[in-house]
Amino acid sequence: MATPQEGGSADPRDMSVFILEGPRLPLPPATPEPATAAARMPLTIRGAWESFILPPAPAEPPPLKRFKERAAVPASALSDGSIRIRFRHPATAKPPPRLAVFALPAVLHPDLLDRPRDVCFCLTQADGTRIHGAAVQLCDVLDDGDGDEGEVVLRALVLLSRWPVYEMWQTLLHSIFAQRDALWPANCP
Image 1 (spheres, helix red, strand yellow):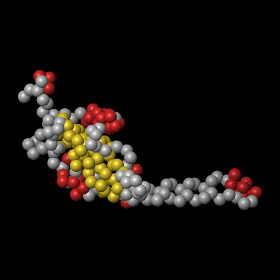
Image 2 (spheres, rainbow, N blue to C red):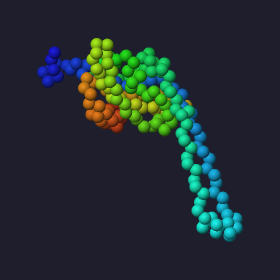
Image 3 (cartoon, one colour):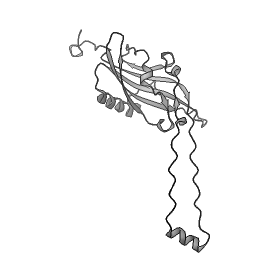
Image 4 (cartoon, rainbow, N blue to C red):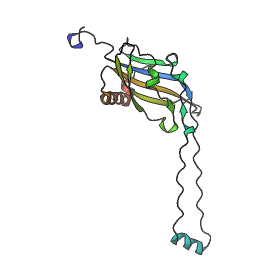
């Protein structure tokens, strides 16, 4: 096999990049913020003096986050048939089966909708070959123009390689993501 230095083409199994896009999913319901009690102003001079010299009542701790804010992504949303491959490099690269299960988020959470998340994984093919993967997961809130933000779309920028150098792949993926306006393929959102 010819190496890239000798003028041949690289083996597509050495490294491949994909942009995956999942289906539209409903946005998980956010719990309302707890109402803050209005501070009562003293009505008398004695009340004002006591509020000045007495220590304030201890503040209540913030309520614990509830798990109902989280919504699991249905398994059917991560099946190979419901995933679109928006970009692939090399052009002949074929993603391994069920790649979306590893690369796309499995849980939606309101606090994490605007930040990309990193994930690393290792896949073992039927012949025993290991493929190491790194992905930047995105949950993009869809804006349909009427002010209703009720759906999200899951996306992932995925790099697959034979070599387990996850930190380097994460740095590369974040560099691509940071420069997405210049580097992103034209047909990708």
